[in-house]
Image 1 (tube, rainbow, N blue to C red):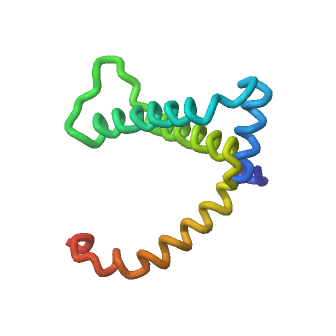
Image 2 (cartoon, rainbow, N blue to C red):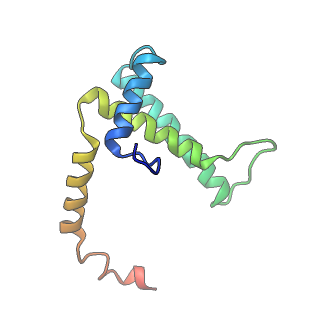
Image 3 (cartoon, rainbow, N blue to C red):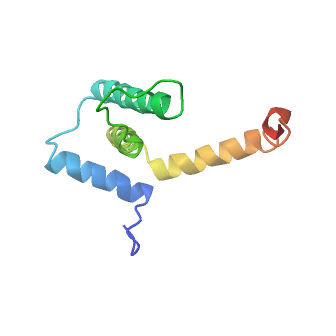
Length: 114
């Protein structure tokens, strides 16, 4: 964490790992974490459907998108940790791939300029 309280991807991975090992006891199996990721992604979808789609919220239903997105980020980080993925390096490589692949594609997409 830097002086502003910002967390890098490396910080995030270290923080999640420390929390899991100290408070969470141990990592869930990768398959369990995949199921948890699907569950949390479904929660994001439910909230998006109610906030930005045609569905209305049920009485008393909490629509905390930020919290659910943080849950998704948490479990993605846990999966990365337990499978040896460096998210900083992986994100950098992914951004480079997208930049090369899509460098002109979106700018030339007339659907995006309507």
